Image 1 (tube, rainbow, N blue to C red):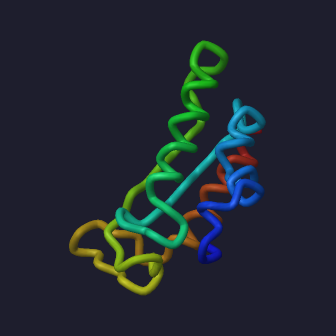
Image 2 (cartoon, rainbow, N blue to C red):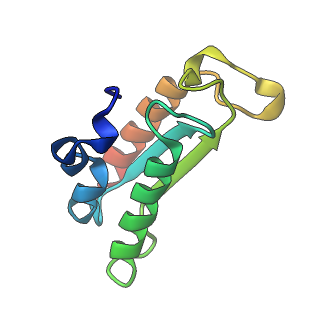
Length: 105
């Protein structure tokens, strides 16, 4: 999210994909806008795919959920469109999902 960080080697070393191995077997939910340039939709997809790849054969089902939703840039909460099935309160949905994960343990 810092301008010019994409070319900085130290900043790149801190991207979440580098901890994908530590997420294997842990419930993971990512909700991202389908064209989020601020956080990077592509990086979020890559993280989810890497965790699934590293989890294959170790745990089934793989507890990774990824949702791409229509947004304007990074404004996930600012564009509720229930007619398209978009989450109107993603923060509430994530909170409920987290509580459900606790019950499963």
